[in-house]
Image (tube, rainbow, N blue to C red; front, side, top):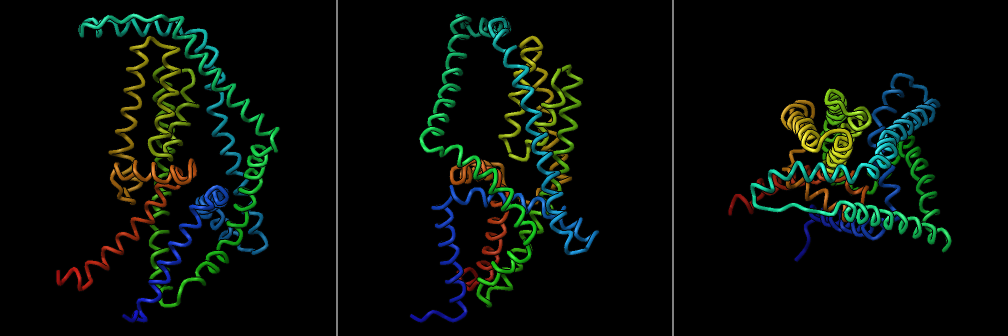
Amino acid sequence: MQVQPSVRPWVFAVIGTLAVGAMGWWLAPVLTPFATAALLAYLLHPFVESLSRRFSAAWLRPVWVLLVMLVFGLVVVGFFTLIVPVFVAEWPRLQAQLPDLLERLREALLPLTSMLGIRLEWDVQAIKQFIFQNLDVSLQGGIQSSLESLRLGGSLALAILGNAVLIPVALFFFLLDRQQILHDLGSWVPRPLQEPVTSFCVECDEMLGQYLSGQWRVMLALAVYYSVALSLAGLSLALPIGVFTGFAVFIPYIGFGVGLLLALLTSLLEFAPMQALLTVAVVYGLGQLLESFLLTPRLVGERIGLHPLAVILALMAFGQLLGFVGVLIALPASAVLLVGLRRLRRIYLDSPIYRQG
């Protein structure tokens, strides 16, 4: 059976895609810094282009790239410094107040357990010793393994140093030579497929661009909401926790969960247990309703169109393949896959196989 000429480009494209995918999976640890830089370049590219259009001199483009990278770096540093004071301030207080906190929690749950016929008794000191002993062991074990790695060839130090240098360098060249890189990649596409591949990439870029633009607005609105709501509730660290929660929703479910745990920990140390649980439940429950039924439909417009179960599956699948970077790129990658599946569905519905079936 002879392969039709019109089919050959698609065969080569499928084989090439599978080969690139297999190579990417095999070299995932090596490619992770480049994937991270490519993702950041996609996010920061509109800012560079905006500056380049306003000041069109070609020699200024490296300056705009460096400026955008510098501002982004300052934002990232500021974002992480928001969370450090929470642990620094609350960890000693947690160690000191844990017995009283556990006792208050037992007293708050006592009426409910009595109604259910359950006798709730626990050794507060034993629980405290168990928690902190295991935490200390975990921290000491992590530090010890890191030090051993440093002594045995410095693999950990080299990996951290290498990524710290490689990611900014790769990001700089991705932003500086974006058009040339895309042109070089496009030259590998067979000529009969260049038009459909180009239109596919344009469609993906438009959908991701609208999604990311709306997502930035959602994150900003949620950061303001959580900061104000936690402040009105009387939480001392309302601003850092609120800002962190708002911007961490970029990582679906995980960011919200971390912010929720931080708010719960702080509120348990400052309020009575039932008041803390009620406060966090109301603030974060309303936040979820605000995000799901108002902000996301209006600002993002559900551009990706993935079911929540599909989102969870994508997070788990990409996280398993690429770790934390996989979690970050799960939704953009899923959007690209969704565009491809929609196109395949249109091809299938227009094919004689479907019509004659």
